[in-house]
Length: 310
Picture 1: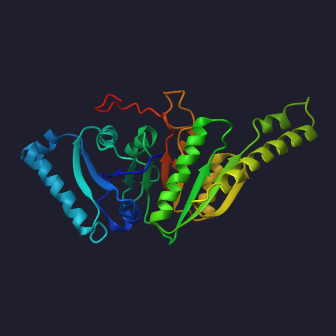
Picture 2: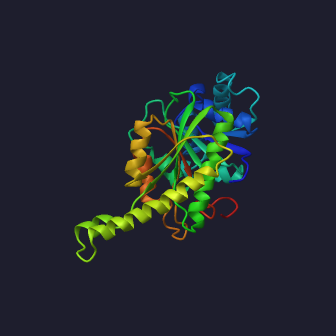
Picture 3: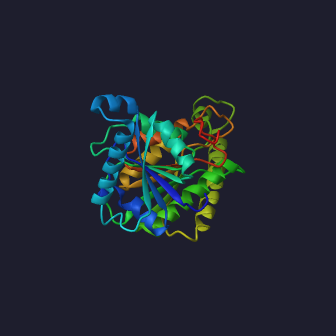
């Protein structure tokens, strides 16, 4: 992840609320980022017929309303370079195109004040298909400092996993530089097919299976703690390496530790262009109540065609 310069804040479901965007605006101020506020409309023609105004007048009205909301967020926005944009079309497609158009490095989506049980359809599409990190702000943060959990995946000479881990940790460092944070890192591991070996196989003894599981654990443990020790630029509060299903372990860590923000990779395989988010990541995101930053690896290709043809 290169140094960030621009971010997009999508305001379709939420007005500019200072208490919700505190951390994101601090991030913009600390790193001198330009903030592009964005709203999308399905059709200017429909709005024009409804209010009997020209498309140009409707666009000016919507822009003025956005700018008014930003002024009401004062003094939070004071000194922040920003602009307002209205785009017509399917929301997630136009949002991804706006990310490309403005060369933005991070998309921020404040969820509605009354939270849905699951992420909205538009948010799901963006988490799956936006090539840049997506930060879904699900609620007002309850803690000072901000409680952050970073989920890491083992890197077995795997470039994608390595990219994911590096990007997740860099995002955590960005946040720690602009907000007071407590950062935990965790890794979930399991021995492939352990259940079937224990329950079905008659050719391998319990002792042999235990030895294989122990060797697997030692390998993960050595990798995880050596990786943690390399994170000199970030103070890590705690490290957790736990055995079991990643989605279940992540949800339990979020709940038990009152995590405010979860950072994780949402794609671990870029060879299959038909898969834009892993089933595991999807399960995690849909079943945690905290805010989430979803990271994509280098080489991820969005299915949305931008103005540059990519």
